Length: 287
Image 1 (cartoon, rainbow, N blue to C red):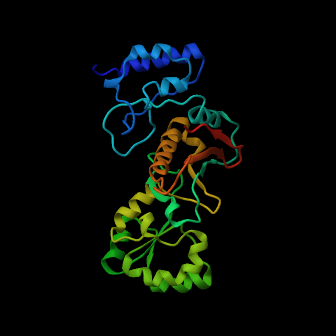
Image 2: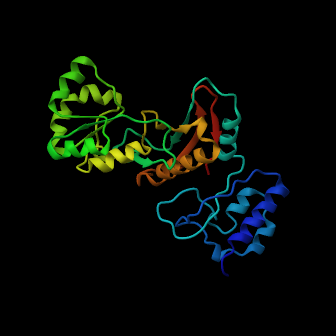
Image 3: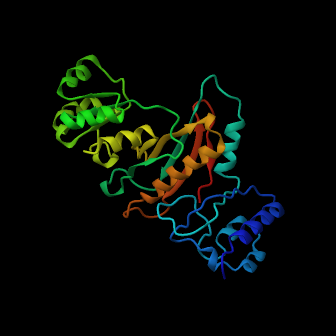
């Protein structure tokens, strides 16, 4: 069978009306484990009575919300899930400031084990809504490159006493070239607790300072487990609106799912909740 995408979309719309379910359609990438539309027999869908049956009618889901390796077309389906909750957030009474929309993900891993750590970075398609200040530790040509790339502060050894003795923390992210880590390492006890220590895994220890600065300025975020196996981070502002927030949500959840450790067993995503700075938490049914 050739492309059944439009037929599938029409069926899902009819199903939504019949079951009085809210179903959000979107996305344009095919996950490696999903069923391609070319393999979908629309007639089979006639016996589906629940959203779960609709999604898993072929043994493998005909949907996904994010992937790094597009190879086809799929539908994203939520039943009263994050899309609806983000619409609620958009319509909620506003605070006197533009609240951050926060994501809290409980994972089925044990952060005490090195092989079950979950940490990484991803660039949010619509940014974070916050302009981050970047400090770069570099010398010579790399320092000049950092200035041209838009770093807010650039320096080397001369910044050590300012940070240690003057408690200077007027920046959000630190980038360092590998040759400067001997210097930056002396600030470990100060920067570590604040989450400011550069790290190769987060892309902040690099010779490509231009790329690092551009990614940070364009909405790069870092996610990592805390001691209770939960990832906390902001993924936008209320003013973004539901559509842009959903795109950011899909990006960060996709990155977290792809970062699943090989040593992790059982249910990986235990729970997902979103909230605003001043608002209540809403739990997401993240299948």
